[in-house]
Length: 285
Image (tube, rainbow, N blue to C red; front, side, top):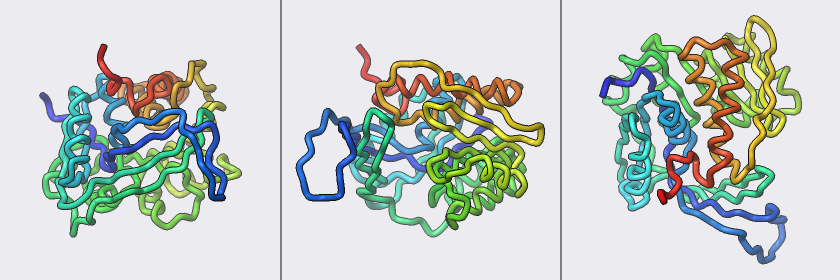
């Protein structure tokens, strides 16, 4: 396999997904789940799976624990054919979440475990970044530790700030370093103002996903909008990662911003139609 041009650095987790009619109220009571599944999670794992689904080879850089869940994470990632996985095994637990989900896309994510922090960036990952053309730095200790090496590589830098509110300190270095910034509107009442401020701070492209209302992008050329693609929603988990992958793949193919948005919306339907991060993880048969 040729060495992938793209590196995605960040979380690969093992999640328990619980489907509810409504998110629980803040009072003692009993709730009956509509269903649950244990599956691969993590925004970086989701991006790599959807890039593989689109035929784009990428390298995933992640810290994975030495627990049984770590083995499950790596086994699931084997489904991403064409992906290179640089997983540093750190002694202790893998990152694990309990996600309470509703059909409307509401979610409460409870961290059950996180990997032990490493004293520094993984040498193999730093070497891989030096040969990359595109680096995606997801919010995580791994992404944070690789920021200097990513900047030094000269690659185009991408990040997904998720529900960034414009002031969160942990997000700031990612926002300052990356030219391509993605986020959603969950953390702001004025996503257009936030997007404009990110552009003024140095980003070349800022994309905000708006759930069922579609997505909007801001570049030096102006504003671009795209509606969501009609689809039957099975589960919203991973839709943002799928959108990112669709946009990214179209960009690599030379598409303009408007077409990249449409490609992102199309790929999002792949995640929306699966109870997993990607249909690549759906049971066979």
